[in-house]
Length: 144
Image (cartoon, rainbow, N blue to C red; front, side):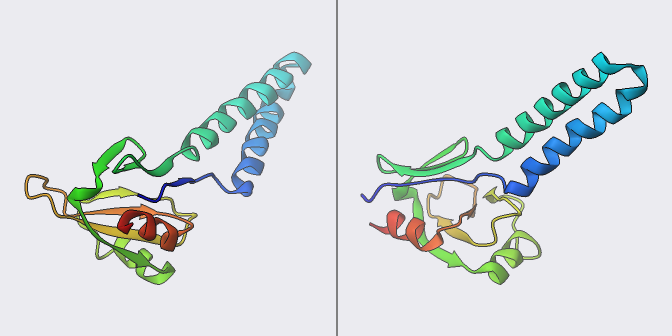
């Protein structure tokens, strides 16, 4: 089996926004003095940075005969053929074509995705939708 690993990191603009959150909190606390302003700058920036980091730390891996996406671990034998989705088709599958029973690991800042049918009859999940920057590589790793 061909190994695959990808981390869906947050875009650089989100890190800039995290810094701006710290600056905004510092400006809000400025009338209370220099020490509260510095506390707001450091505390607000740190909290926003932790939020961006945790959201952008999700990983997709194909290891040991299983697809590991976020907290989910699915044996490759329980999956059908992966379907590579371009940006337009991926948007359709996250909106009007979406099934509420599906497992979706999506990130709005990643335009492409892979959709994989779940073939296990005991699993009520119809398919797995994964946002990925390298859909062809992920599909090749799943079919190898």
